[in-house]
Structure formats: C-alpha cells, structure tokens
Image (tube, rainbow, N blue to C red):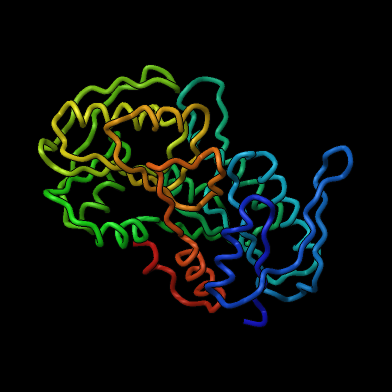
Length: 312
C-alpha cells in the first residue's frame, strides 16, 4: 500500500476521510484553494511520482466548481508523474443529459467524460449512474458500483409485511428488479407521463401494492416532486407503509419542504455519495454510508484484483 495515494478536493472531504479510515491509510496532502479573482489553485504537497493515485471528488452542487477542481487536480497529478490516476466520482454530475432527445440540446454526460479523459484520468470509479450507457462514453476503464448492497444490508434488519419494491418509472425497472431479487420482495412499476422537465403526471400502478409495505427505489432525488407524486399514488392505491431508497440525495430547490409536507412518506434513505448539509437534514431522512463499498473497490483496483463481485 506504500504506492497508494488518496487525494480529495473540497467536494466531500468527509467521505474521503471515511474511505481512508477503512483502508487504514492517511489522506494525501494537497492545497485546493482560490486565487483572489476566484480561479482554482491546486498544489500537490507530496511526491506522487510512480504512485497509484485516487481522487475522491463527487461532481455534486456546486457542480461546476467541483468538476473544475477535479479536472485541475488530475492535470496537476499527471504533470507530477503519477503512475495511474483514478477519478472516484460517487455522484457523476451532468449525467441527466445523456442523449439528444430534443432538437439543439447537448449531451453533457459525453462532454464531461471527454473532459476527464483529456485531463489525464486513466480510470473512473463511480456509483449508480443516471443511465448505465454512460460507461460507453468513456474511452478508459469505468468501474460502475451500485448502492443496492448498502440498502439491502440495512433493510435486512427491518421487519416487513409483504414487501413490494416500486420503480417510479419504466426506466428504473432494472434497478427495482435488482432490489426485489436480492431482498425477496414483489415488484411494482409506476407508469407516468412527463409533461415537462419539472412536472410529471402519474398515470397508474403496474403491480399489487394494496395493504403491503412498499419501498420506492431510484438513482437520485433532486426537487422531490416525482417522489412525492409516487408516494401520493401509492397511498391512494392502499399501500400500508411507504419508504424510499435513493442513491444520490441532491435535494435541491424545495425538496426538503416537499418531503416535510408529504405525510405518506415515512422514511427516505439516501447515501453519503455527496455531502448532506444542514439544510438537507430532516427527521424523515436517514443517510447510509457507501465509504466501505468505495474503499473496497479502491483496494481491489490498487491490488489488481477483481472488482466484479462489487457490481452486484
């Protein structure tokens, strides 16, 4: 492990420290600050020549700041002759624009993939991408982990009555099926039509949820409008209890207010893939750590061992 070096930008220092604690190593020294006019200043404060370097930096809000920090750190480490640079991006920002579904729109997921590659990243480690095909946007290896294990470990300690895993839309069927298979639960899908990027109209539920405990699973919750609509639909359909397990808690805009005013939602479980600031904290929200999952992946990549078992 003497050739391993783990760095962190300012995006999520707490997660980086938890990963280092799991690996029983120290966080490497780096200066990430700002010049007087606001430009990002980076200086690597230790020798990384010939080392296997990992940078912990989710591109969460403020997305542009955190993404630029990551790109500049990669460039600094490449110029310092690091042997290999792996960008550990638990939350991959700009992933929602992953295809050209309207005239004259960008594919930002591909753009960010190009930026990371050109900056000098040799490998990407990420978790629960908004769309699995984003892996194909990279011309370098991508290890795509899933938070399902952390959630299942927690839910296995709870007692449920006729549990049903619910996908909030057709696109999330694969994720919901993975949860249902692992936990031995039923499966339901909410069929909805989106009127605009901010507004959705829920149609009906495919599957049986009446008098059953339900868990909505998804990759991210931003404004929570879709989540609240799904909860209301499940409540009207007679679900006994309603919880949600969502990998990335963006919780932007009026999300906390919506969750607070949603009596049907008993608990929202999210991971620490991005920092949970005070304005995101709420009695209904519980945070599960993915530091052990990421740390185990880092250890296996560094030791040139198989990471495939962590994909399940």
